[in-house]
Image 1 (spheres, rainbow, N blue to C red):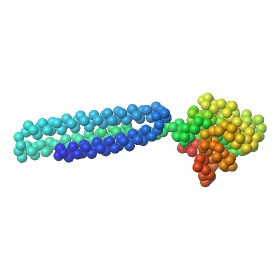
Image 2: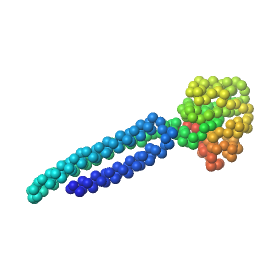
Image 3: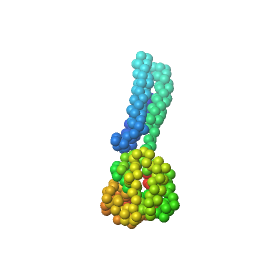
Length: 274
C-alpha cells in the first residue's frame, strides 16, 4: 500500500509539472514589454501557486509516511499486527488523495486563463506598428459618402474604444475626401464631441481632408505608415507595394489581393472587440 501511495504521489508530481509547464508557456507568450497589471498579477499568482502546492505535497504526506515507518518498525511482526498496519494505511491513502485534490484545486485557481486586454490585442494585430493612417467614411464615421457629410457627421460608437487604444501607442492620422469647408468642420466637431481628442493621442492637425480619392492615396504615400486602413479596393491595390500592411474594411468578404493586405467587416471586428 505504501508503494502504491508513493507511485500515486509520483504520478501527481509528474502531472503537476506538465501542467505548470503548459501554463508557463501560455503565460509568457505575451512579451514582457507588453505586460500590464493583470499579467503581472498572473505571474505573482504562479509563484504563490507553486509555493502552496509544494507545501501541500511536502508537509502532511511526508509526516504521515514517517510515522507509518516508525510504527511498523516498533511493532512485532505477526499476522494480527500486520492486518492492523494494513488497515491503518487505508486512511493515509485516502488522505493523500484528498491532498492531491486540494493541490490540484490550488493550481487550477491560480492558473485561470488570463484574457488579453484590448490594448494587447491591438498591439499584437498591428505587429507593433507605430504609424497608422485610416479613412474616416464607413470606418470611423457612420456616413458612406462626401455628400452625406454635407448634412451630418456621426462617429460610430462601436469603433471608439479601438480607436482610442490605437492612439495610445500609434501615431494615428484620419483622412477623407470632402466637398466643402463646412463638411470639414462638421467632421471635426463630431470627433471632438465623441471624445476622440480628449486623450491627447490624436489632435485635429492629424485629421486630413482632400478633394479627390487620389489625394487620400497621396497623403498615405507621403506619411509612409506601417498600416493603412481603407474601404476603397482600388486604393488598397495601388498602395499594396508601398505600405507594409493594409486593412481592407468591407462588409462583403473579399479575396486577399496581396500577402500584406488583410480584410474585415469593420475595424472593431478586426480586433475582436465586438
